Length: 94
Image (cartoon, rainbow, N blue to C red; front, side):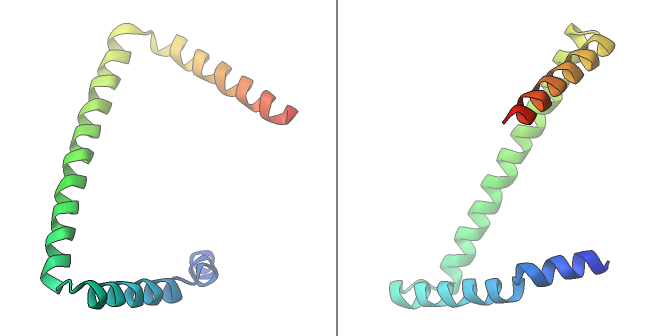
């Protein structure tokens, strides 16, 4: 809990949120955007995000099934471990 508190304090979230609010307010005033316009845009973004998230979930499920159907789990684990080991070795060389 203390580490999370320290992280949030270090990130200065309150200042960043206040800054974003100021910028949004100025933008809305300069371009005559209403609260309703912002809500409509946010709702649309939320809908699009949820659609993309659903598509991603479908792709992950299909990919998982493809892996299960076409690869031996033990061989796959060994192969992935070898690839990770190679990546680590290359990173150590940098």
